Image (cartoon, rainbow, N blue to C red; front, side, top):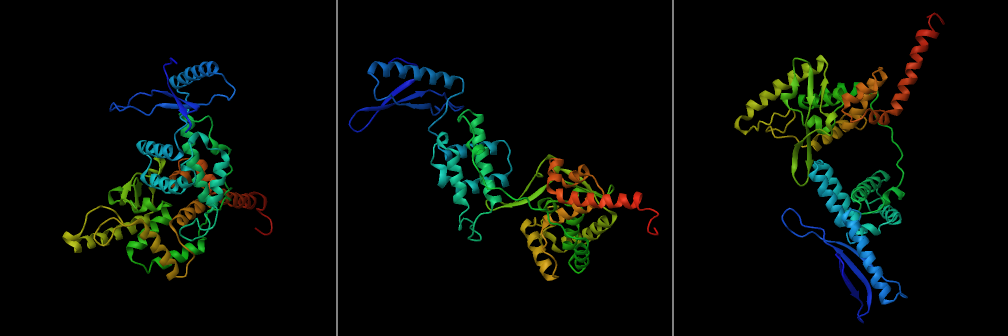
Length: 403
């Protein structure tokens, strides 16, 4: 048979032809190495004559070659694991943050034993539903020994969906099976925040704490910044003249590389945050203490310029912030404290005082205003109810009931 595509007969143990493998040369990479060819398998019908087989095989080869030429061919041999690793490497080349890549790899470690061996083109929604069912069974949570939460399982679904989205974009598969799968539903949780009485207690208890931790906690409450953003603050970003700080770094930790500095979560997270005069005065007191520590350490001091450091000036482990908050709340019998609760608290205070969503979103460093309104929808509702009462007091109830 004469054809531009390469055709190979596949035989069983008795020597009978059972199918044909059609290969089309894909080309070479930048180093000159030959790329894996496009491959498809065609099986003749049992009642076909040799002449019919030859004619149909040539037709299939020509059609397949044209599909390859126009980028419409499906690589039926790639497994999900192989393609997933390619997509992760693609994301890495496109600048996805190290913390995100690490999380993707952790998720894949549990996905690939279940569906990794399956060919990409063979995976159906039912395979994914079975995977989600397996992930929901007891024992899947390595930390507690219990079940994975629906929120965590949804993380797996989103990663799988992004892998198939790339495959669909590259015309490797005709559709994304994750779009037709049924992941578990996640019930929206209201963002927890501190009541004013709690804030007052926290503020009073901080007066008994070392100035380093007092300043750090104060900045969490006033700025609403993320943990990594506070840990990543440097003295050079404190604008003493304009009473503001420039949030432009994230200090994170990963088991494979340790403590490292990276950019903010997104471009809008790189922002200037105004601070009240009380905060600026506290920063001045803290800077004086900081410089004394630096002088006492002498040559032992590592000048990293971070605001919050270890005893020798080295960057602080971000987890030490969370650990301190846990110990602090237990020490003074306060409600459980974690970094994001301060963030939610600042947002709630601003909403209850009539600040608009756009301004709040900018202060929080959200990529979209819709993110802010989605997270704080319940707070917005309460603030609106409060506003309605204020309007009624000012317009409808004035001069009545002795007022």
